[in-house]
Length: 279
Image (cartoon, rainbow, N blue to C red):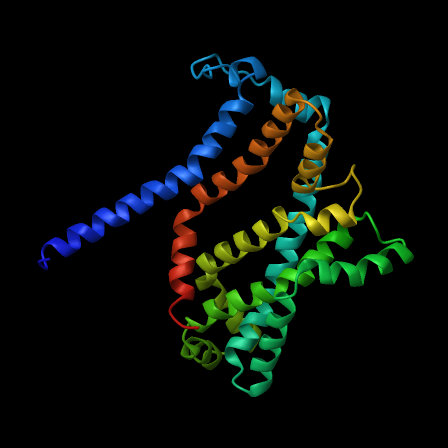
């Protein structure tokens, strides 16, 4: 095979693999959207009535009649608290670890990553009996605290990588100009962390938003976030029409994630590139 044919073959193979991945990833989701926007008769006709008029009846049933909006509110409260606390702690810890060169910093980072590598059920078995005993079960702040504790090491590690891409000389120049260490961090370093903050914040948001195990075990059915509530909804669905309502709930959960990635795609790409400069 000639050298000129090799790049064309490589591009063709990449195109085929990309098309295969898109069909696996997008086609099921597109079919899920179709079912959510149609009634059972049109969705499961033989063949399916692809051009039948769409309807929002399934979404109205889920969000209004079944009060799925309460789970949306729970999700907003929990994820907002997790992102705020995780970024606050992660910024300070990540900055400190990026500027500290002693062996203790590496040991702390390694210990944190070892804790993050544990399955969530291990953490759950340790904290759930205590929460029951002290009346802390089924509280938003309890769930947010557990999610922060479990996901914080990854947040710190990501932010540390972003801080390492910013030269230490910038801190020194700010302190020469009269800034304290905290002032240099706030005035010289933090303004450069925009893409890193967006990337890490979105990562922290997704970890909390997509959590099922901890949310379903630490909250009751009324206060469960959407992902855990959808799992309970699917288990309770006994007929095909109820499954249609569950599909509408699944589309409702997925749509905000797609919107977030679409809105912040440039910042995410910039943040990933920035964090990959040094590690």
